[in-house]
Image (cartoon, rainbow, N blue to C red; front, side, top):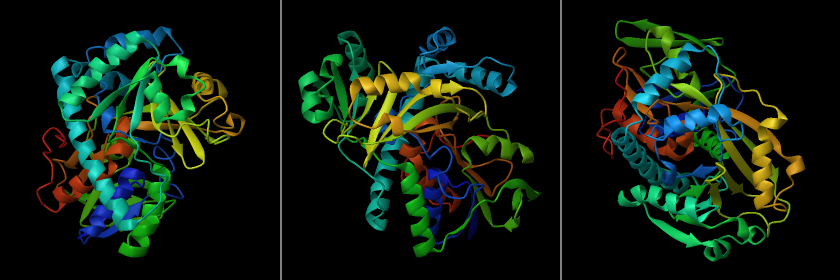
Length: 417
C-alpha cells in the first residue's frame, strides 16, 4: 500500500515510521525544510503521561475569566472577532463537566502510556539519540495549600494506575541538587516516575533520517499542500506547489493546519491553535541546572534539560494562527526560571520561540478514518501532549489503516466526522 503522510512534525514522522515498519510505501509531505520545524520544534521536552489531564474541566471557566484580567497568568485570551474560536469555545465548555473531564483524561492517559511503550521500542530498534532521560518528571508546589491540592488532584491519576511519589523539600533537593539554592521556595512535589524528557525536534529529525536510510521513506521538503483530488468516497491525490502526489491512502498529521486543509474537501474538524512560548538556553553550570524535568504548577511553567541545553516553556494563549512573539512575552517565564536556577543557564544567549498546539475541545486527539473519505485518516489534535502521544497514535492509526486490531482500546479516540 502506498501511503502519503501530510505533515512532518513528531506525529507525522512517528506515523511514517510505523507505516514503513508495516510494509507500506511511505511518502511524507511538509512545507518546511526539515522535520519538526513548527509545533514540535520548541516544546517543553516533557514526555508525560502524568500530564494527561483534560484541559476542559469544571474549573476551566473560572480560569478563563481570570485570564481576561491577569496578563501574567499562564492562560491568555486575546478577545477579537474569530468565529473559529467562538465555535471551539462553545464545544470546549460542553466538555467541562466533571464526568466528561474524567472520561477525557482516562482516554488521554490510556494513549499516553501506550505511546511510552512504543517510544521505548522505537528507541531500542533505531538507537537514535534525542537527549532522552528517564528519571521521571517532578510536579512541585510553592505552598502547603497548593501542594495539598496537587496531591488530591494527582490522586485521580494514581487511581488509574499511574505510579507517583509524594516528596518533601529535602527529598526534592536529594532528587535534583539543582534546587539547592532555591529549596526555600518549594513546599513539596509529586514525582511521576514513568514520565521522561527528550528533544522532540531531534527525535523527529533523527527518526526521519533513519526511516529514509533503513525503510526507504520519501520525505518531500519545502512542498506546500494546496488541495486534493477526490473521486466518490476516496481521495485520489494531494495537490502541491511541487506537483501532484497520488496514493492509496492519506494520513492527516498537519497539526493546527489540519482543519484548514480538511475544509477544502468538506471535512469539518473542531480544532483550534493554542499558542505556547519557550526558550532554549545553554547550560552555564551543570551543578546548578536541573537534572530532572519539572513543572512549577503554581507558575505554570515547564522545563527540561536536553543535553547541554535548558528548555523552558509556558503559556497557553488563544490568539488564532499568530506565531509571532516579542520579548515581553517571555518575561514571566524568565523571572521564574531565574528564580529557581539563577546560575543554571546563560539566559542572555537563549533562543526564543513560539508555536501552536493543535487542541480539540475535549483535549483528546482524533484518530482514524473520516466518514466522507474511506482512505483519508486523521492523526491530529494532540494539544499539549503531542510529543508524549506521538509514537502511540502513529501505531494506532497504522493498525486502523491496515484493518488490524489496535493494541489498546480506541473508544473515544476515533474521529466521528
